[in-house]
Amino acid sequence: MELNIILLPGDGVGPEVVSAAVDVLEAAGDRFGFQLKTREYKIGGCAIDEFGTALPDETRDACQRSDAVLLGAVGGPKWDDPRAAVRPEQGLLGLRKELGLFANLRPVRSMPDLTGASPIRPDKLEGVDLVVVRELTGGIYFGKPRERTSVNGEIQAVDTMLYSESEIRRVAHLAFGLARERRKALTSVDKANVLECSRLWREVVAQVALAYPDVTLENHLVDAAAMYLINQPASYDVILTGNMFGDILTDEASMLAGSMGLLPSASLGDARNAFGFPLGMYEPIHGSAPDIAGKNIANPVGTILSAAMMLRLSFGLEAEARAVESAVEQAITDGVRTVDIAEGNESVSSTTEFAQFVIRNIGST
Image (cartoon, rainbow, N blue to C red; front, top):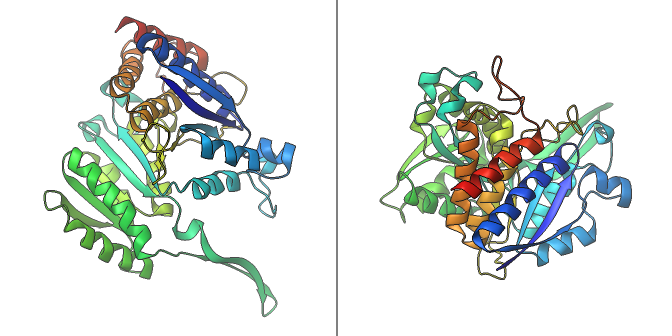
């Protein structure tokens, strides 16, 4: 079985964590009998430098022809001028839109061996195992108009939050289906007391819920959800929310795990690959971390676990995905730590060293 994977290392620590994840995938392939066919393309800041655009046509076309995409991170201070017409983030947002990736799955789980790395009290972390389903191609990140205008001698800026019934319905069905496979509880997060978009969101989600009578639906306002994520995180199973709210809440939720470097994600849509599975894009939730780029100290766990999600969701390789996840957990149980999750006098491993520990564990299971 040959897996046609497009690699988009991107900027900052992206190349380092993607390289680590590919090493783990190749080791898993050696163990389980699949092969990787990988090609690397540019996106984000490095693409702007070479092509003048954050999403070159050749990158887009290659991703559309692939079975799955593994992405590192985009952005950095070099391209961080808010007045710039071309920005690295446009590459990521544009690719999500071009591939129709309307749902982003972000699992969050607290590992017992890492509770000390979290700023949250250990008793609050017991039993935390949730998934945030974030709508990815609508909302305020894509709504029009988006502009600056001069009114009465001063500059005004406008961003538009826009959702249609169909956009909400399709991601809600995906989230309810996921909840049905888990603990059968779904929390829809919105701001229905203020926003018209959120009122529509709540109405459509309630309609979709009728098709899933075995799943319990609860609605939380986003400000309350932000509090409950810290105060009672284990009460959540599947969280369904819009683009901006999901972006913010999952960064908060990363502290439940102990570090943003630990969290993976999968972006899915309706398109299918050559194997009949979703043509997904997989990436850690963290940014490009330019302050540590090139130092070989970035945490590769989020990218490695994203690769495991890719094996499961885009290729149907459940046993292989579980083997990678178990190997990561074993490394952490054995005390392997990158600098962001190390405590006290614990020894610190580099990005590549952590990946090698994971690879050894794949070979020993």
